[in-house]
Length: 233
Figure 1 (cartoon, rainbow, N blue to C red):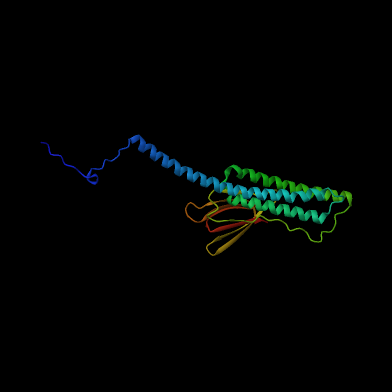
Figure 2 (figure 1 turned 135 degrees about the horizontal axis):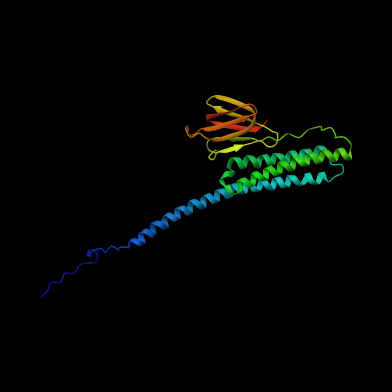
C-alpha cells in the first residue's frame, strides 16, 4: 500500500515565475525612456518659463511704444515728454537684451529671434528721435530747451561661471562702445572703448571665466576671472 504524505499549504515549495528575456529587455528600455521623458519635460518647462518672461518684456516694450506714436501725431509734438517716453522705451529694450544674454540661451529657438527684436527696437528708437527733431524744427522752428534731459539708457550685464555656460561674443550697436570691469582675486580692472568682447568658461580653471577683449587700439585675452560686468560707455 503506497504511503501518502500530506503537506500543509505553507510547506509547499514556492514556484518562481520566470519571465522571458525579451520582456526584461523591453522593461529596461521602457524605464530608460521614462527617465529621458522626465528630463525632457523638465527642460521644456524651464525653457517655457524663460520664454514667457521674455514675451512679457516684449509686451511691455510695445506698450511703451504706443505713447511715442501718439505724441508724434500731435502738432507740434511735445519734445520733452516724447524724449522721456523714448528713454523709457530704450530702458525696456536694454532689459530684454540683458535677460536674453543671461538666460535666453536656455531656449535656443527663441534666442536669436529676441536679439533681432532688440536690434529692430533700437533702430525704431533712433528713427523716432530723428523724426521728432525734424517735426519740431519744421513746425516750431527751433528745438525747445530740455529742462530735464531723459536718462541715457545703459546695458547692465554681469557674467559669472553659472550664466556663461555657452561662449558668446558681444558687440555694441552703432558707434557705441562697451566698458567692462572684471575681477581677478582682489584686483579689479576697468577696460574702456571696447568694440567686441568674447566670454566663455575657462577650461583650465573650473569656476572662472575666460575673456577676450578687442578695443579701438588693442586686443588681448585674460583667464581666471571671477566675474565680468559690461555696460555701454
